[in-house]
Image (tube, rainbow, N blue to C red; front, side):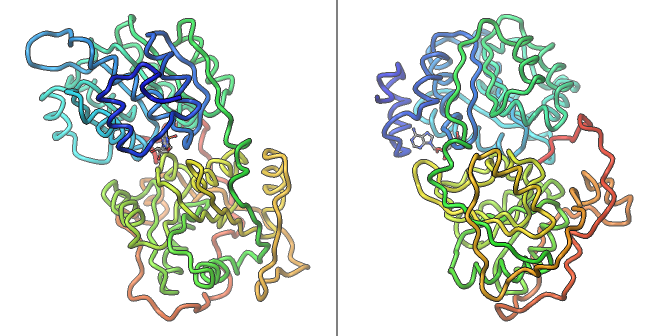
Length: 449
Ligand code: AMP
């Protein structure tokens, strides 16, 4: 199967070939013809399956070969792609530009956390394909700086995440402002009742596609558990990075505070590290990601939400410094490695507090993960589990400030690195018991990431 056989024009096939893609992925070979036909689509696909090109390529084709309806020189938005996070929005728009480089279509991305005026200027100049996070799009709608009258195609990308993040009301308000006659594409990794209800109300006799979930394709990823005491995770991680000479490792922590603290500790050990999470400014996150991608940063420490949609090809190492609260997140996390056929390694540092979480993960992926104790880091056999702190005490900088902690808006990078292998003070408090936060499941997090 080749891209040209799917009915894509020469300009699009050329752009895709330049990216080194030889053949469409399963989601692409099913979604592209379906979208080209013009009907609605319900697609079950996770990040890493090639889903972005699956909807971007046929959208480019459809728009490129139809005249824009408003007439005149100003180009109204004709395709709207909604994503849950800023990172994903930026990456999707980059894909639109890459795949559409030989076409005369304009694209733009709008998300919160950055100035609105450049976005207004860009919209005024004319945009065919707009990628947006829901919160900032609503801001533009309220200010009257966007015209949605000419939308022909709507994409909800990672719809399950949007609902998890409390965007359902925002999405409904946006849907209500769109012209009723349009093509709707809904992409979601999971199908909860809430997603089914959204799909029922949004889609008209949709084509349905589901590609293998990542939790059935985890075979290419070597997974391992290193049992360790809760206060020795950091020295173990530094030891692994140093002794195995990992040059690019994505590390997941459960909380933003845990991410910041780990970055400080790694830097003290001489390992360049930055954190990426919802309290970081957009500029800090973009910088961390680009330093990590270009190899100048050895460790990128991320929370689950911030890491959603991070697209880094062939990432060799993923470390679960803390196991995720939700077993599905384990699959999302390790899916960052072993992409597009490359092999990868996912390592989890598991302390006694996390044994139940581990059981949940193993049940989900239907296998037990091999365990290896690293000499010098043997866990205390008499250790008792303690309750786990699920969040950094809160969801955002505002709330942290209320607790007397400033919202950190910069990147956490420690001062001059010290000798490699130094040990932290005993008693890592990040897993200490704490009351669970009181956030309602659907409370809105503004353009959270
Ligand atoms: P996505 O699931 O859209 O996040 O894409 C995952 C990764 O796969 C991205 O890095 C794409 O550049 C890459 N990719 C998408 N389509 C193909 C393809 N047909 N062949 C090889 N790699 C691809």
